[in-house]
Image 1 (cartoon, rainbow, N blue to C red):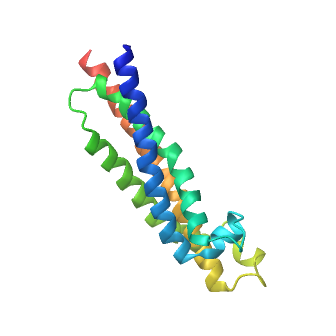
Image 2 (image 1 turned 90 degrees about the vertical axis):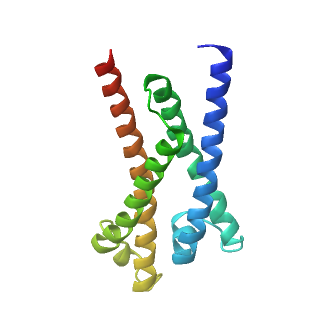
Length: 165
């Protein structure tokens, strides 16, 4: 690998991490509106802090790793396939993450697998506990969806690489 291609790969990783960090900050602006308790109780944000700013910072940091993962997968796939497109790669990962977030929230709220409602009785109302679960499931969905999309992209590229050899 040449120094130029290595530098390009590092720049792509950095850009991917920053882009996903920005999306994470934006996502957490939506979820903090739905459930402030998720950030106050679940993430340990101090009530004296600016909740929106703290949520944005948490989302930004959370998005960095996902962005680096997605970009890193693209850096690995790009030279191995002829039809690789960065826009398509990013859109597939973002769409899968969003889809999983949309399903993860309602599933978590319906199942309450960790007894959040019972454990938070007296602290959160039923509506607040439901919102907490919705947001928690959406966050799990984003991570699960993004990771699954990256794995699928890597497996597809590996399969195409074997068939073209």
